[in-house]
Image (cartoon, rainbow, N blue to C red; front, side, top):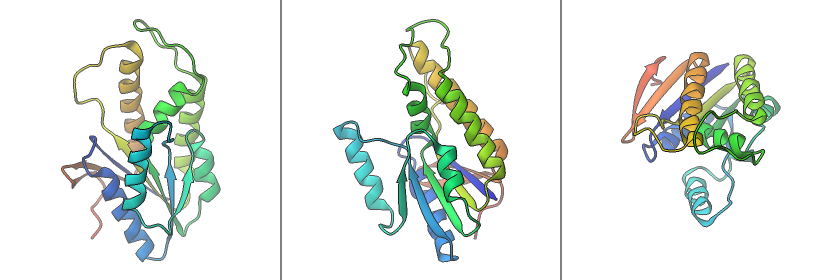
Length: 189
């Protein structure tokens, strides 16, 4: 198993870099499965999705999965396959709001069962996943502390998720201004 976490800020070039890693794996004979976690609920998301589709090769198998990420990884797991997941923070948001529960503006947030279950399943699957997985995530904790309990909870859970995935991953790559910085593991030639 080979797991790579590629993370950075919005528009940092992290998705493009992850796609370059997947393309290298494809050139080495692996097939590519692209797992998209975003849904097209509104016009802005539809534009973002269209931009990402235009960036990647049309022949890559695309699987849209907003919640059951571990299931998709298990289904497509194979030594000759690279799975690119874009992105973990959208997936986190999907899981937090899947049960459509109301969150308080202030005070303690009770994490939804969907998030707790799916997060545990993903981390367990990554530990035993054959083949190569590339996970894209946002770094959302470098700015100001947001207003609202659920916004702060999202930042906290995103940071915890990135740490947990980074602990499992063989490679961790921070991307800023389109430039990769390897924090863990060696940079491929």
